[in-house]
Length: 158
Ligand SMILES: [Zn+2]
Image 1 (cartoon, protein in one colour):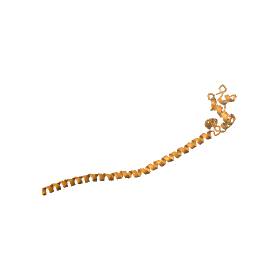
Image 2 (cartoon, helix red, strand yellow):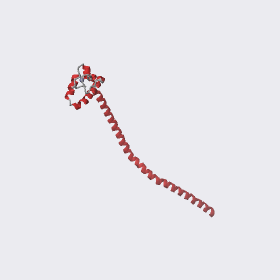
Image 3 (cartoon, rainbow, N blue to C red):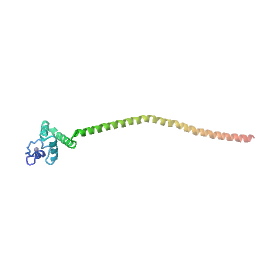
Image 4 (cartoon, rainbow, N blue to C red):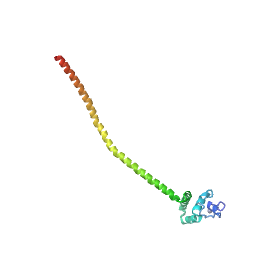
């Protein structure tokens, strides 16, 4: 990009931005805060050394990781991103517990559904009983008619 528009790093460090400036691809001049926070937490010479040790294709990921870690360190000076990681890990283990409980509940419901099938079969057994009640009702009707015949018979005899 040339020396006319120095990158955010060279602007902050008040130096001339060389054509092969190691910061220039990752710290554009329109986002000065991105380099400022990394410089404050890690120091620009440490960031420069870390980027030089990495292959070019990994440097962008390293910069975004450094920016994230620097922001976490400013937000939580004691634990930094370790605080965020442990918080997320505790959330993961809590959700894994909830998942295990839910899976156990599903198993219990599935086990309870096996006896529920048996009452459905007993309803099938109840159907003939209901038919028996209606047939016994017919028997009672026959008994009544037989009694009436007997009563008429008795009346006819006496
Ligand atoms: Zn530069």
